[in-house]
Image 1 (cartoon, rainbow, N blue to C red):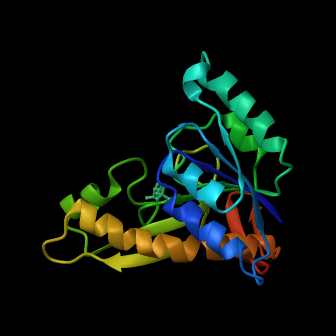
Image 2 (cartoon, protein in one colour):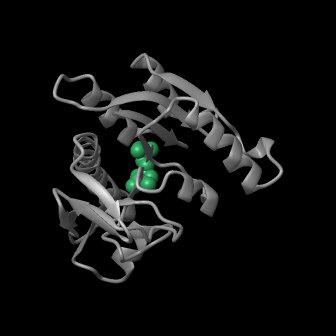
Amino acid sequence: CRAVVLISGSGSNLQTFLDAAANAECEYAVEAVISNKADAYGLTRAQNAGVSTEVLSHKDFADRDSFDRAMVKLIDSYEPDLVILAGFMRILTPDFVRHYSGRLLNIHPSLLPKYQGLHTHKRALEAGDDEHGATVHFVTEELDGGPPILQAAVPIETGDTPELLAQRVLVQEHKIYPQVAQWFAQGRLRMVGDRAEFDGELL
Ligand code: GRF
């Protein structure tokens, strides 16, 4: 299974894919890492792993449509079976999402459908929730609204700050995201209509 990973920043999730792909049981390979920011640390992680990197800055394009069209062209040059969004901080056009329908994954730092959008850790704390977490989902046209595949919950502790909570959630992200990529590569995961299916069972 050929995977292309899109990032904008640190790339700690990307690192877990690079680490997993280096081991024999892993059924996917990271063919390229593409960033919309030239200074994203994840690009260094990819280079250290010997993976091709590309930078395509949204600032070089007049609008979202032309940026996304160039992105599709670049991604498709690597002929991916799977496109993984790992901290890619751009809203995608419907054309982009449709083009990769059923093979486009994202991780969102909340227990979706709770807290779509930004500042999820702060919002969970302010709401007085007793747990928070992360969700890996197929991407559809609705922002953070695509079918959930796997979630990990983290208890909220007294004295938590958004930063502390984010760190504990990130530890869980690093477990569930490569797991989902492996399932996808093994052919165990599909998007069927607006649902995810795992081993033939609708989730
Ligand atoms: C993570 O919090 C992820 O849930 C969100 O963006 C962040 C990416 O972190 N989508 P990293 O770049 O993988 O370290």
